Each structure stands twice: as C-alpha cells, then as structure tokens.
Amino acid sequence: MGVPTVCPLCKHRMGDLQPSCPRCNGDLGALVHVVDAANRKFNEGLGWARQERWRLAAEAFSAALALNPTDEEAADFLDRVRTAGDRNRVVAGEI
Ligand SMILES: [Zn+2]
Image (cartoon, rainbow, N blue to C red; front, top):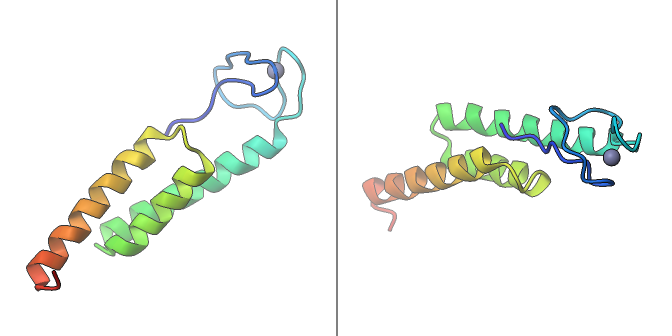
C-alpha cells in the first residue's frame, strides 16, 4: 500500500517512512504509528472482503483511508467493496 515518503516537517522525499527524517532529523514516530494503524485497517478490510463481508470491509477501508488519505489502494478497494456490496443487495432483493 502507499506509504507517505515526504517528511511533513521539511518536505524531504524519503525512500521509505522512517522514525526520524534523515534530513531535518525531525521525529516522525507519530506518523509511523498512524501509517501502521492504517496498514492494520487495510489488512482487516482485505480479510473481510475475502469473506464477502462487504459492509465490514468498507468500514475498515474507510478507516484506513481516514488514517492515510494518500493511500490510493485503500480508496480503490473501498470503491470495489462498495460496488460489490450494492450488487449483493440487488441480488438479495433489498433494494
Ligand atoms: Zn524532514
């Protein structure tokens, strides 16, 4: 999944997110925690999607996206599980 690679303090481009910025030495620990949380939510969403639990998957991907708005993969999966969920309701006659 997409990980922010720009230091929010000095805008330095990093290869990978690190606990501190190699240029300005700023503490990026909190950002690392947020991205970790986003990754956990993203993986949770994948798990629900595999079980075709579309609403739970959409909630998890939404949370991942809220934590990491630059994550295009989470946005893409959120679209897909929402579409899948809508189709299921049509099939089940709920709409
Ligand atoms: Zn920096």
